[in-house]
Figure 1 (tube, rainbow, N blue to C red):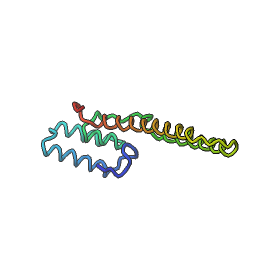
Figure 2: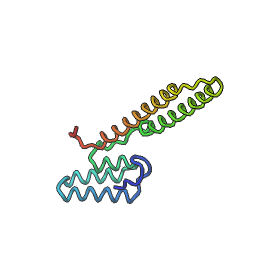
Figure 3: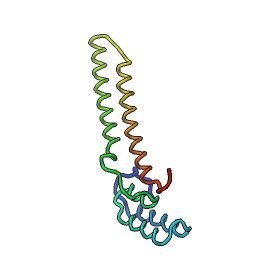
Figure 4: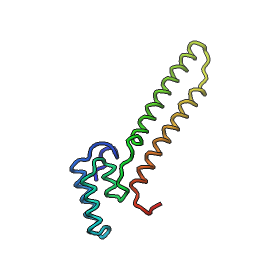
Length: 139
């Protein structure tokens, strides 16, 4: 399956479908899947519209795609963090220029705290992706 695009985003191409079908056929020929399981997975490959759903069909996950809000959350958190950090930098710069009080800790707490929160949102989304792809019965 093609990993050239960002996972879970973008449309599934015919090449992606053919590569996924090849992986499933190879797994069937090595005995990992029986005929019925391979047929079920191939049907999921034909119906997949996102790369996440395609990977779930090949890897054996639940086959359900993540909610769109969860997929968009890291971008929203990153954009919000960048906007708040930029605004705080401008305010910090104005306070320093006008009042002569340069308090770097104030700026660092805002920028680092927001970065930690945005990283946490990104981590939750990636954890959810891994759990959706993981085969049933694996911790």
